[in-house]
Image 1 (tube, rainbow, N blue to C red):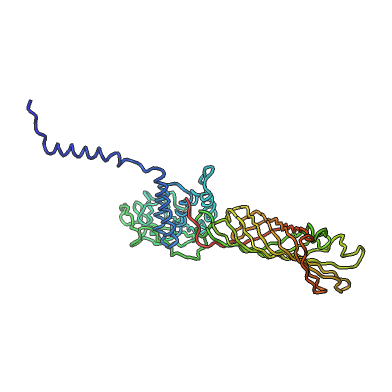
Image 2 (image 1 turned 30 degrees about the vertical axis):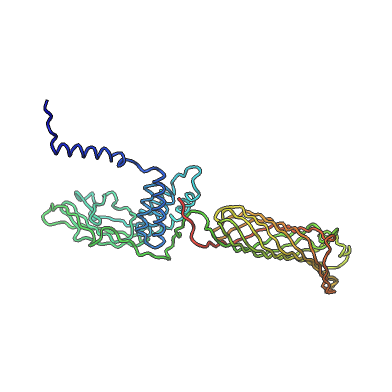
Length: 445
């Protein structure tokens, strides 16, 4: 049997089939979930930078790409913000609604929860900016045949007639036609933010009756309502990332509460014979590094009460006793998350002085003070309230006085180690810190 030679078209067809068979599996391969998430994160980060640079339309495209690759509340939040910044208020409102009603799975990242909460907070202000327009036609749709109302060259459903319809800010060109009727000319209606307008389209009867219905073109050189100019002072929540605290920040604070002395001033001399409990307050300064570590300083002053059962004040005497204490020290602490309800604690070392003044009928009988080293511990719970952190706080200072002063005789003396007692100062009160972030917050999916 004689074999026929293969024709050139047949050979080319076989080659093409083989090539397609080789590349087809790769062409149909899908991106893995890991690849999609990595690509979404890259698009998101580019979008954040573009938004910060004021390039809102470009940023919107990046966030929409990120959302298509990976569904995340952080993407929806930025999409809504960029839609609003480009004048697409109606679309932004719907995106905020989607974000607000999104059901987050158990164990969702904090960034997702914070993005949803921020979207819910921004939505009311966005809604207040959306204008509305009510369109009516005279004669009405029941009095004419085949009524068509056109907005920027697009037919509007007659069911929307008479309804105050939310629209984006911009200029809208209206016309209306029916069998034998038409508006004399298109009507341009400018619509600004927050405006509530009504427009009535008046139909005129055409000579000769049944003229064809013609759709009027939109406003010249306008495919969609132009966005309003960006106003940096616009009343809206500032876009923010939700990736947790900045690496570096500062806490400036005040604290106040009760100060209770205990222990011994000197060996076998109880603090209760020297001073009593009182109230005071102080200043705190922390530098926050590595997100959670605190390095700071503290100054505290307290006015203390009169001692009880004191040998310095004879029973039944009219001697007036007043005490005070001052502490100055440095601290090292930890605060796991400055932006959330979080534990805060520190340890410190400093100098404590305590003094008492005895007087009778305006005459000073005795006045002295003690000084020494003290180790401090404190713990509390930080509760965020905007830029303020409210902290219920418990503090404990433990030390010993190493020197004393008699101010009446101008005598200073060192207390021998054997004669030193161990004193304790307990603080129970409330602190308030103003939190300052250095740099921008990290971004997170």
